[in-house]
Length: 298
Image (tube, rainbow, N blue to C red):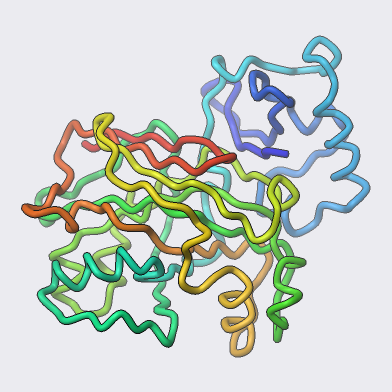
């Protein structure tokens, strides 16, 4: 199933689920499920309620009160205001590790014994279709990163790797927008990754049962229609099992935690000369089975 946060009018956000052919949004209220936010749904939804929604998805639009064509609603970021900063993985595809080293003029020996984790500040996620603020008054190297993001469904502490899949609620797409000069200037990546408007997210959350586990999904990005990134999440250096297990040994991953799994090669800094974003560009981040997250740059 694919859960969405959306507006059927200009004023109120509500939760919904896409029908089977993804042409209509069904409000969860039509199935007598009345969570107010996606965070609340993730924390509290029962297996019985999930089954009720799964049954509802199979109904025809005329059978569902409030069903709306997807073309007539505004999709919002699935979790518009995450409770915590996003946990991100750096250089988690080998080809991206190589291009990153080239950009920084560093040697890369092909060894990655440990995962690289960093935090990305998010006050408010950017909706599908809304603008990425380039902050061009202070940014001269705006970059894109198409990423698969994992949503944790229940508090995770000391999770064995072979049980990690039991803690996954679902997946969404995240564009890890980055200001490269700021990122590298400060050595720690937090500031250069965390400017306001640097977290486009969506267009939905595909539940964990939508894919075989671990998901091996084609992942791409396009800028103004030009294919830039083209890989598969099966090529992650450190996979979901490893990441959830390792992090949960020392910290509690709360329900609703977002873990962005890193980006493949093809980001702007990887080209010679670099292909950084400019005002007016349109970035599409695409993950097989989840959809396309498209945002213009202002």
